[in-house]
Image (tube, rainbow, N blue to C red):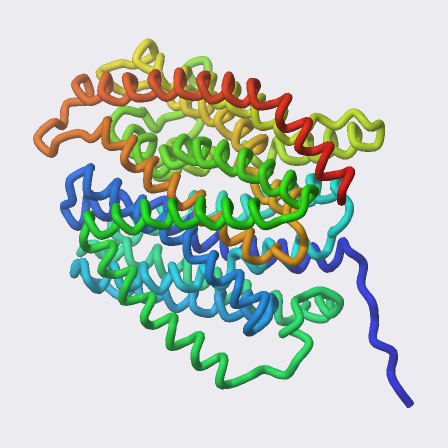
Length: 499
């Protein structure tokens, strides 16, 4: 007698992916909250080196999915790559937890994280696309909720890891707190793995062709061997800035070349969709230059020029460590995501949904407001330290803009790219984001503070000047996005007519 295989709803399948992504983001953002501070305060790096090392790492984290997506589609399977990536990430954060100030050892641990992310990130996103394939309004809504769910993990970790670091350092000294905080990130990935393994049946109906076949041990061995080579390469790239710069720029030319090749060789409908995806992807690149400021210039601004005390009408409410201010981003994302998801679904049901290109233009204008708020932070400063409430307001606009641009970047690929190119083009999207992450570090270095400048009165104008310029940059991006709207409407109509 055959036992029937249970079927699961889209919602339950989506919940499984969202949960493991939540724990993966717990690990990544817990590490992000501290790593630039770790390089500046513990390793003694100049601001400029810390910004570029972190940005090169961020670039690699986003470039690596270009290969990971293909491995998931063609070699091991999307579900297997998701699990393997999570395991490798847990090992990477565990290696960061080993006490050391040797840059080669630390950069090697970061290299392991790059490889783990390369396998994990594109395949989880591709599974979400497969769950809701063919329903544009649900895809937008799903990716927005997906974006919200991962911010639950990042909020908790960004608040927790700085506290763990400070507490352990105060109790035991010797800088052990940094490494205990990184260990917490590793534990998060282990919890995530056990969670998704217990719910794996909900994903029976989704995946790529290799997921339906028995595991090929030989192919697994080749993937792991290639991963070791990639770890070595990533370590070298992080150690030598000139190598990192060359790598990122070459990756950019390769992605553009591949896009041009695919567009030229596609039928009219596919060509229109790919062209629309390219235009929106280029806008996403500009957005992530702004986004990268959170972990670079804004992070160091919080360290040197923000009063961590939250007070209201003279009453002290609470105090945050500088690293915890980054948690404002996911907190705002969680508050705003359900509202936007509801608005998208409601507008979609009435046939009045704002186009992706329109959402991008609106997002850039809101990001501009956020950076102008940071730019006037000096007006609320006492002794070179601005109010913590300025950070709350700035992050509010910054995060809403992120939802309208960064949060829908994956939806661009899901909506405009043919299914047969899904995994690869998800990878191409992440390569583009990686390039912008590195460029964001280059931009952040315009506010790089020399080691001998420690007076907040002197560092404050360095940061506010950069933030004001970024505000005007976001205004320019808004105007470009608005100018592209007529072309996007034509391309979308052609794509849909031939779809």
